[in-house]
Length: 323
Ligand code: NAP
Ligand code: GLV
Image 1 (tube, helix red, strand yellow):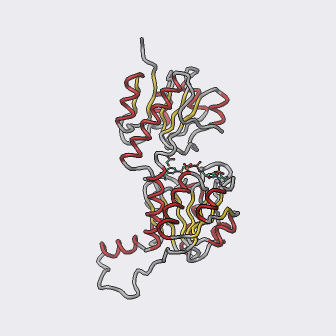
Image 2 (cartoon, rainbow, N blue to C red; image 1 turned 90 degrees about the vertical axis):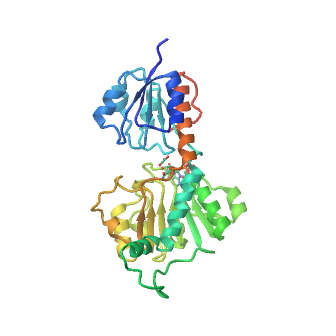
Image 3 (cartoon, rainbow, N blue to C red; image 1 turned 180 degrees about the vertical axis):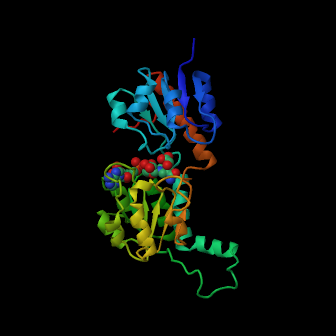
């Protein structure tokens, strides 16, 4: 029997590719860069399944190019803002993602950024490498304390909770948070408080963003929101670049409106080398590596492959996404 054709937009870890090879006819986009739009539209023609990455825009043009056999889009990510989910639903195409298995890895990156920005590690490392380290400095490279400060989690979901757990347990930070629904169990476990965003921004020493990118969260942190934050506070973004109005962030960081920012995500990705953010000592940027650990990426590959295989069999996806 001929195996069903599927398109895989990049080389994911072997464990996922092997699962797919056993049961499908794999069209794998080789190379380290994403497929161009033309390559993607050409590659998916006639496929029953697409394994996409967060850098692939999956919309009605893609669904049209794939044709009427397309049954499933499996995203190699937990975030699905790159996919037009409502349009997929209208067409009866299942969509899956890879939650949970990257939660710890991403929370670790958020905490790492927070510590690195609070303790001015970018400036310190630059000074060491640039020969500016002349002596032990009693007034040099002075950063922020963490213990008993207030942490604001914007989006207390899986990753937000994992960040709060680390910082509450390790440094006894007080926790305030936003979410669509209050999490009463966290309120009693950690003394966390569900608050409105303006209160969170005004009272937190560290603000960490963990909402999905949706029309409601696009530029949630704009100039007005930034103006509510303490000048001594730190903003961490491991969610999506577009949750923050980046020009306003540059102004706040330049003008002393914030102590610093740590970003695993930005707009666009990759960030152009002439971006003003790269000139700032108080802004540390990583290349979207939240889930980049061996265990997380292998588990994501397995989860994405299993979603895709279930979808082409017409079965419910193990990890479905709905609008
Ligand atoms: P999640 O468990 O679904 O958590 C999302 C949280 O955001 C939930 O608490 C949700 O509230 C809240 N939320 C959603 N819309 C909101 C709104 N309009 N206003 C306020 N709160 C809102 O998702 P997750 O697994 O933690 O992942 C979060 C995001 O992190 C992903 O969507 C992705 O964009 C990003 N991410 C980045 C990396 C990276 O490599 N940097 C890795 C993984 C994920 P309720 O709980 O009340 O529903
Ligand atoms: C990474 O950003 C993800 O959403 O999994």
